[in-house]
Image 1 (tube, rainbow, N blue to C red):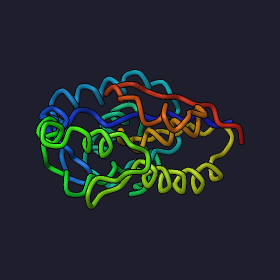
Image 2: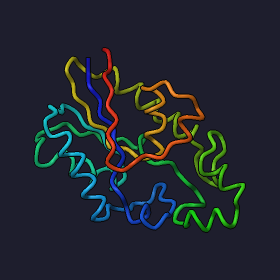
Image 3: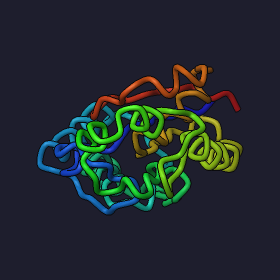
Length: 188
C-alpha cells in the first residue's frame, strides 16, 4: 500500500485579489508561505519518497516549503498535467467584476463541468489531463511509498473525485481550503 497526500498551493496575490490565475505565474503571498509551512509541519513525520508539482511557481514554492527542512533528497517530478485550469480570456480578470458583467455566464464558466470560459478549459478538460497523470504515476508506486502532490484548486477536483468516488456535481461544487491536506491509502 502507498500513502498519498494531496494539497493545494498556498495563497497567491491573485487569490487574495480574487483574480482568475489560470496558467499565470503568480507566487505565494506571505500568508501563502505560512500556509505551505503549516502543511509541512503537519507532514514532517511522514517518510516521503516521491513528490509531484505542477510547472507553475505557486505549486513549486509550496512544495519547497512543505519539504524543507524536514525532507531531504526527495525525488521531485514536475508535471504540467496537474496545473491549474486555463481560464483563457478570463485570466487576469477580477472574478467579482466578471460576475457582475456576466452573472449567468460566470456561473457556467466558473463551475460548470463541460462549459469552458472563452479560450480556456472546462473542468472536464482538466479532469482528462489529471486522470492521464494519475494513470501514468499510480502504477509506478511501490509498497510503503509516501507521495506528496502539490496541486491547484481545479486539479484537486478530479484527484478527489478519483480517490473519493465523487459525482461530477460534488466535484464541481467545493472550494479548497488553503492548508488542507487530503490523504489516501492506495492499494497496489
